[in-house]
Amino acid sequence: MALRPNVLYLHSHDTGRWIQPYGHPVQTPNLQHLADQGVLFRQAFCAVPTCSGSRAALLTGQYGHNNGMIGLAHRGFALNDPRQHIVHTLREAGYWSAMIGEQHIARDPAAIGYDRVYKVPTTHVASVAPIAIDVLSNRPPQPFFLSVGFFETHRDFFAPSAVRDALTSLPPANLPDAPETRRDMAGFKASARILDQGVGAVLQALDLHGLAESTLVVFTTDHGIAFPGAKATLYDRGLGVALILAGPGGFGGGRVIDALVSHLDLYPTLCDLAGVEHPPFVQGRSLLPLARRETGALHEAIFAEATFHTAYEPQRAVRTERFKYIRRFGDRDLPVLANTDDGPSKELLLRYGWADRHVDREQLYDLIFDPDEGDNLAADPAYADVRRELAARLERWMRETRDPLLDGPVPAPPGAEINLPDQVSSSEPTTRIAGPGTP
Image 1: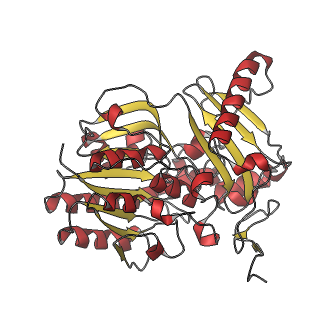
Image 2: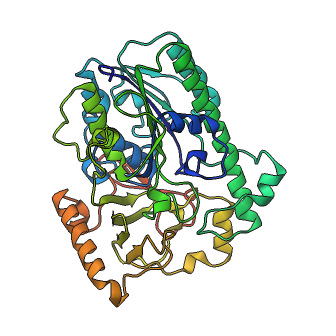
Image 3: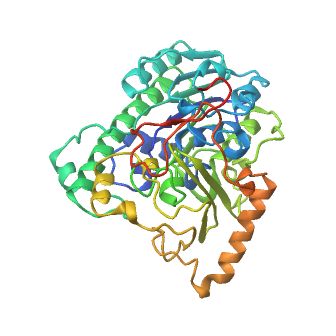
């Protein structure tokens, strides 16, 4: 293994696992090539299924309610301590760090602590990839941690690239097969192809300039796709992420690992590769024992949370290999529609009365017989023992991590902008939370 490998952190918006290496009919040949060279984690999950919360959890190694990012950075939520960002820990091992493109954990990216933040006109592939290529071609200081973030596949999607795609693309299994959802998925696929082109261009530059063998490439996304029942939910469609690592440390050979892993596990993994101790605040576990075949499992269970997306919708979940238990907090038993991105699929469900559909406060799913999480077993006497055990495990985790939700509703910070739970769209007028200096 190379000493202190470079780290190229490639990340996208709202992609979930809907790419070619995970078996979906979405043409992403560059990501497939990366998976063929590296290690693909088939059961990888984010800790928070929202943009800022997910990225903050990965980059601090902590759950959202511990690092402070319980909402969206551009709406006034922030990390408790930016010094817990991984670039500060890697700096102790001599790493130079730089950021290009999307970041979404600070209103001012300069406050994060990167050695260099490159200015980009947009965070789309067309703007980000050329700058990343230029940085690599000029051989940055080594070892480096280079964050390259792409806006794709966030909405609004690109136009479908073929008539056939618009007519025949299969939507996610939880959505009806209708013209609206097929066109919507075709747009996602077109955006995923652009994302893949950006990834491929950066990887080609890495290889062309002799950096590939000494660099660990990490590709992931923040959370699930921006469709109803996915992003901003605690279903696997919201929590499931693509995670491919390729390079030094045992991440090679085109392997697939089925063990449960979390975004939180990346921080301690990079610490191990860099030869630095895990900070005491880190809550994940290193992936190296899995990569080196020293163990077949890291976690008996993983945990996830959502507090704010655009609106307040407090939820917590525990997932084992077989079961998922979700608990919603508060009195609301209707959907919080503003937390679902606008688009044709959402419009279709709204026409059929989605706004009035009851949402259970406790949900239990048997993922072997119900992988799409559509049959809630929380009230089924046959699963009562499972429900009690997982509910108790979730509460223990909340207490051990000092989750403020146990003490009642969690307020947004002063100055934050949020939608109200009864609003239908995040584009509706927001409410600004009053505080010192706030009218």
